[in-house]
Amino acid sequence: MTLQISRRGREYLKTAHALLHSASTMTDLAVAHQLKALADLYERRAAQASHVDAAKALARAATHAQSQARFEGDRT
Image 1 (cartoon, rainbow, N blue to C red):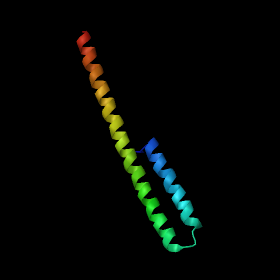
Image 2 (image 1 turned 45 degrees about the horizontal axis):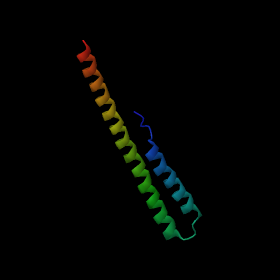
Image 3 (image 1 turned 120 degrees about the horizontal axis):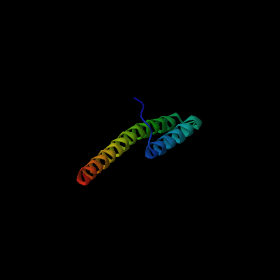
Image 4 (image 1 turned 90 degrees about the horizontal axis):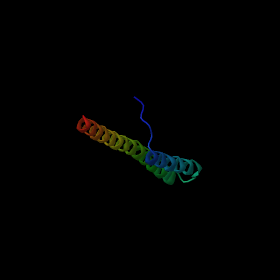
């Protein structure tokens, strides 16, 4: 199963890539390692945000389908 990256997840990934780019240009290794750790955190947040956003979208779709089914049932 492939997970679609949500808009919020893409923003986290964009930030992670910017942090990794900055880390690659650092001459101070301590700062570079901290930036890489922060980039890892943002990558995890991207995955988590995408999971949460997908679950919310699925819940909205289920609610909509349920209300449509109720509406169709009332019409008969």
